Length: 425
Image 1 (cartoon, rainbow, N blue to C red):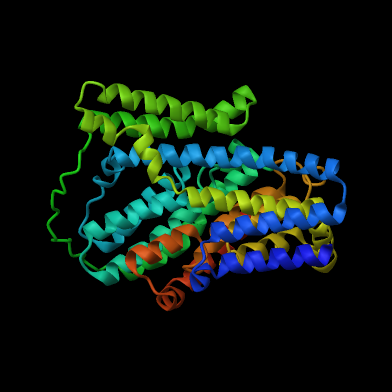
Image 2: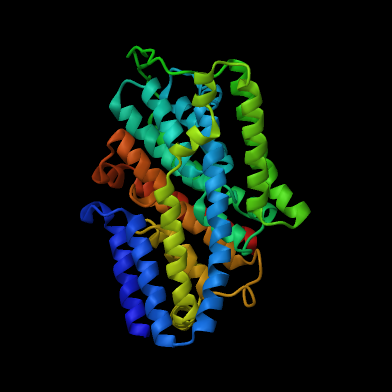
């Protein structure tokens, strides 16, 4: 049984990694893999009551994560539909590239902690495209955005899917994560940002002169923009506090917050024309949610759960402990590996490999994993969702990023890891 499970999981993982070559969406690979793995496990174990109980336990945990992500994604789309992010990005104005790097980098770092690194990267790269005319300047800014988005997402339980997984799974808590990872994540950004801004200190930017055409799209009022933006950001900030005070799972706080934001938005549009109300209705905004992304996480988490229940991951963890020995080295290597492959399955595997009994909540392993998995993807342009999004929006080549940015991102990653280890000690 073990051989078959490992083989199917390896094929599933390989299909996810090379989805662009296969031209098969990663969600399809993840769902097929989950179905095959559970089928093989059930047939080989031949114990329906036990398998049923394990599957029910897995689905309950997976549903919390998926529901949380769905609500968070919807909340961000509500803000985006009302052009709320424009209120933030409109304040970024300068004529020097080095100053713009610092402004965009810091805004991205903070914004990705409240939203998520993928959404923030898309918003900020789109902004830079409107600001800068010269492509070489836009490429440097896009690289800064990728690093800042991943660094900002690492120190917040809301900023990166991997950190959210650890938070909902009980491996980390919100306040301890913010306290422990803010400084390492900031150092991770400051190293490449300082070097790139110093290299560009005498460069003057050229503003984008392409006229913005009115596409006839229905827009919200200035008051509604402010209402939706600050209500949405307030909800995101309040979710960790809600979970701490009530003891309820985080998805309940996100569900309540999304309901309050939708109610406020609907009330602000109730006296406007029907076309206006339809444009901003929740059912319309829900069509913008990337459901394939949610199906990918569902299939992936169900697949990893099979390896956990079959004790394959426990054996792998024991082998790593025997071979490497040092937990800081193991996690650092995992972070470097996340530059090549998706960090979500890596973190899901680590969560299944090591138990909360041996490594309690907020222990070194879990917090350091949040840092390494969140920031290691910045080393290569294909190593994170933010990097892939920037790569598509700005047509960044793998070679350009590797030649000009990878060494700086690696320096930031290793320096931040060193700061975390010293800080923890």
